[in-house]
Length: 310
Image 1 (tube, rainbow, N blue to C red):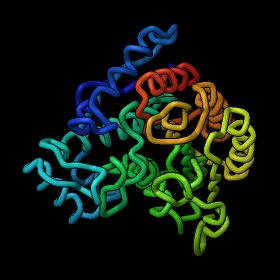
Image 2: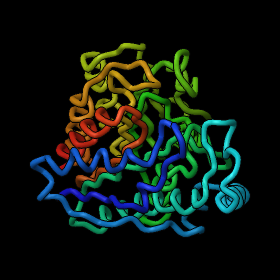
Image 3: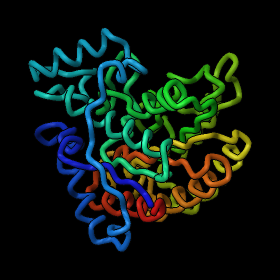
Image 4: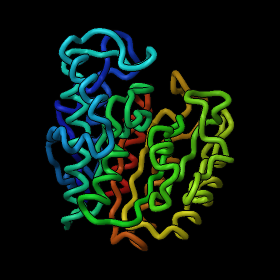
């Protein structure tokens, strides 16, 4: 039985005005999911706020102080201009992290082994900065919690968002215990411009990371072929937990990206990762929503993810 963590606390993570990451994304997804045959079988839970100590698993104290100050004033930007502050942004972002940590705790405790958190997957935030609509990096915090709190030694992170998960990659670039596989639009054509094939890790982790840039206009056929490489890589890594960031901005028709997948790509990835999790992780698979700025696309893609989990 799959777990869904949703609610107004994480729906509040969105930016004002005409910003593409608006607060309507959460409910657009839920309206679609409620029509799915899997809806009655899901276990539901509400988000909680991450504590300051939990946020410090990944982020620096100085950075958390800066976000808290901006949250009180609601003024300015948290980065170079993509991520505006708004009143209460600290609380909204802390609830995103708390939702993911709650999902992780329930996966580790059982009997739930698969979970989905829609407004999460904020993969651009670095340890000391915001970036690309992302304030706190819930994926990075989950990886740190999986190891530091739950005692795992091998965690895999898989990212199928159109944008490279740079905040996660560079945080763990020199860490051989974190397997990293990312299929994203080629950085020559899309923010953040990183994730070249040659970026395979540094130091003790050299050769342990997998970045697969996809050409603009890539379809499900190309995605499935590339995902076979991801599967071979994960089988060799033998992780104890898989964290999936399944941004829906890789579907055709997204207003800010250039890939052309359908929701079947997300269903395929989730099905294949669930099989891998059964082989290596006792079924433990934590999925987060990530990007996606065409509401119909994100609703359909994330619904297919949950159906595959359930």
